[in-house]
Length: 89
Image (cartoon, rainbow, N blue to C red):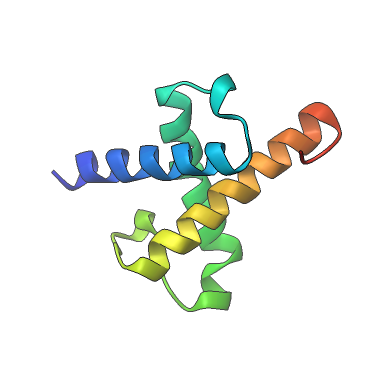
Protein backbone atom coordinates (compact mmCIF):
# COMPACT_ATOMS: atom_id res chain seq x y z
CA UNK A 1 0.00 0.00 0.00
CA UNK A 2 2.87 2.36 0.75
CA UNK A 3 4.21 1.79 -2.77
CA UNK A 4 0.94 3.02 -4.28
CA UNK A 5 0.95 6.13 -2.11
CA UNK A 6 4.59 6.74 -3.11
CA UNK A 7 3.64 6.53 -6.81
CA UNK A 8 0.63 8.83 -6.40
CA UNK A 9 2.51 11.46 -4.38
CA UNK A 10 5.45 11.27 -6.80
CA UNK A 11 3.05 11.79 -9.70
CA UNK A 12 1.41 14.80 -8.07
CA UNK A 13 4.78 16.36 -7.21
CA UNK A 14 6.06 15.72 -10.74
CA UNK A 15 2.92 17.26 -12.21
CA UNK A 16 3.20 20.35 -9.97
CA UNK A 17 6.88 20.73 -10.86
CA UNK A 18 6.06 20.46 -14.57
CA UNK A 19 3.40 23.16 -14.14
CA UNK A 20 5.96 25.46 -12.47
CA UNK A 21 8.59 24.80 -15.16
CA UNK A 22 6.01 25.02 -17.99
CA UNK A 23 6.76 21.54 -19.35
CA UNK A 24 3.35 20.08 -18.58
CA UNK A 25 2.26 19.85 -22.22
CA UNK A 26 5.37 17.78 -23.06
CA UNK A 27 4.96 15.20 -20.29
CA UNK A 28 2.48 12.46 -19.70
CA UNK A 29 1.37 10.82 -16.49
CA UNK A 30 4.19 8.25 -16.42
CA UNK A 31 6.87 10.88 -16.93
CA UNK A 32 5.33 13.00 -14.15
CA UNK A 33 5.67 10.04 -11.78
CA UNK A 34 9.28 9.49 -12.86
CA UNK A 35 10.10 13.20 -12.44
CA UNK A 36 8.51 13.23 -8.99
CA UNK A 37 10.37 10.17 -7.75
CA UNK A 38 13.75 10.98 -9.31
CA UNK A 39 13.34 14.59 -8.20
CA UNK A 40 12.75 13.36 -4.66
CA UNK A 41 16.03 11.42 -4.81
CA UNK A 42 17.79 14.53 -6.11
CA UNK A 43 16.16 16.69 -3.45
CA UNK A 44 17.16 14.20 -0.78
CA UNK A 45 20.74 14.30 -1.95
CA UNK A 46 21.01 18.09 -2.39
CA UNK A 47 18.41 19.71 -0.15
CA UNK A 48 17.74 17.34 2.74
CA UNK A 49 20.89 18.36 4.64
CA UNK A 50 19.91 22.03 4.26
CA UNK A 51 16.32 21.57 5.46
CA UNK A 52 17.07 18.79 7.93
CA UNK A 53 14.25 16.58 6.71
CA UNK A 54 13.71 13.46 4.65
CA UNK A 55 11.94 12.98 1.34
CA UNK A 56 8.99 10.94 0.14
CA UNK A 57 11.50 8.23 -0.79
CA UNK A 58 12.45 7.79 2.86
CA UNK A 59 8.79 7.19 3.87
CA UNK A 60 8.53 10.63 5.45
CA UNK A 61 5.30 12.32 4.35
CA UNK A 62 5.63 15.57 6.30
CA UNK A 63 5.25 19.04 4.83
CA UNK A 64 9.00 19.62 4.81
CA UNK A 65 9.68 16.32 3.03
CA UNK A 66 7.05 17.15 0.39
CA UNK A 67 8.68 20.56 -0.10
CA UNK A 68 12.15 19.03 -0.46
CA UNK A 69 10.84 16.45 -2.94
CA UNK A 70 9.00 19.15 -4.93
CA UNK A 71 12.08 21.38 -5.08
CA UNK A 72 14.15 18.38 -6.20
CA UNK A 73 11.68 17.75 -9.04
CA UNK A 74 11.87 21.42 -10.08
CA UNK A 75 15.68 21.27 -10.06
CA UNK A 76 15.57 18.07 -12.14
CA UNK A 77 13.33 19.70 -14.76
CA UNK A 78 15.56 22.78 -14.81
CA UNK A 79 18.61 20.60 -15.50
CA UNK A 80 16.76 18.71 -18.25
CA UNK A 81 15.62 22.00 -19.85
CA UNK A 82 19.13 23.39 -19.63
CA UNK A 83 20.62 20.35 -21.34
CA UNK A 84 17.88 20.04 -23.95
CA UNK A 85 17.27 23.69 -24.88
CA UNK A 86 20.30 25.54 -23.56
CA UNK A 87 18.18 27.58 -21.14
CA UNK A 88 16.23 26.86 -17.98
CA UNK A 89 13.00 28.48 -19.24
